[in-house]
Structures are given as C-alpha cells and as structure tokens.
Amino acid sequence: MSTLRRTARATVAPAIEHARARDVQFQEDMLLVRMEDGRALMVPLAWYPRLAQATPLERGHWELIGRGVGIHWPDIDEDLSVACMLGDHE
Image 1 (cartoon, rainbow, N blue to C red):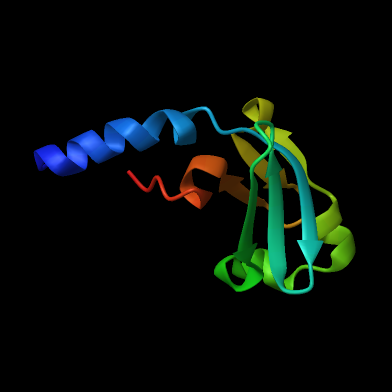
Image 2 (cartoon, rainbow, N blue to C red):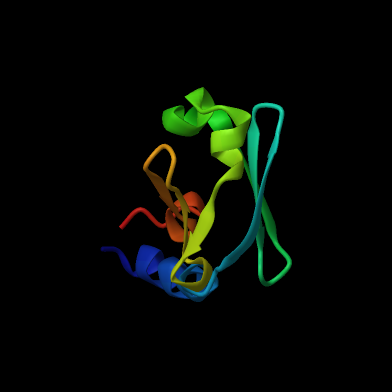
C-alpha cells in the first residue's frame, strides 16, 4: 500500500470505524441512515436488491446490530454494515 493511501486511510478510518447508525428511513427509491454523530447517509435503494424488492412493511422492520455498527432486516435476512456503506470495503 502506498504511503499516500496509508495516510489517507489513517485520516478517514476513525470517522468510519466509529460511525454508528441511530435511525433508518426510506424516501422513494433511497435509503437514508442517520448516524449518532449527526451525519446522514443517503444511498440508492437499487444498491441493495433485497431491500429494493421488499415491501414497505418488511423495510420498516429493522434493528440495529452491535449498537449501530450495522442494520438488520429480519424479514428479508439482510444485513448492512455502516462502515461498508461509508466506503470501507477492506
């Protein structure tokens, strides 16, 4: 890994590593996740086919995993990591 990438990752990692979801909402074809630190993340529902195909009732039945490090939808067996949603794919 290059020094530049390592430095950039070290700068961004704490923000991602400590990100915790507190609320989930759906707006038309978007997933909105509100974080404990006040940030809000909005991503296209199309990125998550199970959620896109789920009914509004199934989407509305979610629970936080690990004090907000992830989100679980038991009715459709879908789990999303907040870190992955923020771009930490390693």
